[in-house]
Structure formats: C-alpha cells, structure tokens
Image (tube, rainbow, N blue to C red):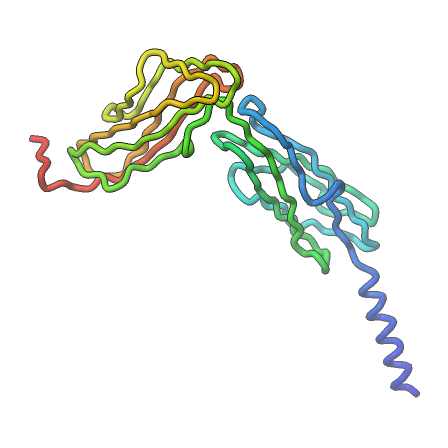
Length: 236
C-alpha cells in the first residue's frame, strides 16, 4: 500500500515537472525574411519578439549571431509566463549577392528547446555586381613575377551604367579598366587584375570605382596574396 502511494506521488510530481516549465516562442515564426534588398538598404534591420508561452520563469542565457555580419541589441533576460521581449537584429549585407541565409542562436532554460534557432533570409540584388564575388585571392605568387586574376563586372539593372574613377592599392596592383566604361543592361565587362610584388610576404589589395547607379554609387573589391621567394628575381 505504501509502495503504491509512493509511486502515485512520484507519478504526480513527474507529471507536474513535465507540465510546469518555461517554453520559448519566436512570435511570427522561426524565420525572419527581408525578401528583396539592394546595397542602399544596408544594413538590414528587423524587430524580433520572444515570448514565454510556458508556465514557469523563462531565462534567456544568451543570443548568439552566426557571424560577424549579424548583430543583436539588448533584450530582457527573464520572462514571466506570458511575458515578451523584443530586440533588434541587424544584418550587414556589404558585398553579398543573391540569396543570403544567416542564423541566430537563442539559448534559454527551455528544457525541450534549450537552443532555439532564428533563421534570417534576404535576397540581395546588386544592380552592379562583381563575379564570381567581391573578394579574390592570387595563387602561387613569386617575387618579381606577374600574377593575374580575372573578374567580371555585370550590369543587372535595366539601364546603362557608367563606371569611372578607378583606384587600386597597393602601387604594384594594376587593372585593365581606365577612364569611363559603359555597360549595357544585362551585359558584363572583364576586369583583369595584375600584380607584380617586389617583396616576400602576405599582402592585401583593393580596387575601388564609382558608378552612376544611385543604388550602387561605389563598388569596392578586396583581394590578397601570399608572395614567396623566386630564385630568378634579384631586385638589385
């Protein structure tokens, strides 16, 4: 009899513990989508609301973005049953192009979902795009030898775009485009990047130019290289 009573009490306690617990909910769903965005919209921001739909205190231990391009504002760390907190999420789209997906981890004392994932989505439309992307890396570089990397600049808009004011750094970096270049809608031109370094070591480089498209007034491309010694090169 006593054993049966003890088991019954244990059953009640277990059920109470299962029923009585905090529960996290992202209001509006676990995905936040900006849909179409252009460089002039940078950075993208959105309001995210978290609600405690359980019946015990919800403690939000941490909110962690998946990368450096994403950040969040302050939030209330303890939510009573039925209580909510709203924070701002920021996505810096920079040189991104096309479909972009990022995530934010929300860590709490929800026993069923201790780590909740918020998915961020955006379709970044670059009116003037750099292909394959805005970062390039030279390979197998040797002191005194010229290396080359080919890119394309594409006009995704429905109007002609004019490129001008081309700038490169460092001094040993050169490109084939000078003056003003016009790209028709839907067309592209080749950007040939050449470098002839005179010393060993890693370097960073950049290419910058302006366009007459108001949604992309300035385009910047970044690159790097690791230069090794060459038995054939003697700067003296």
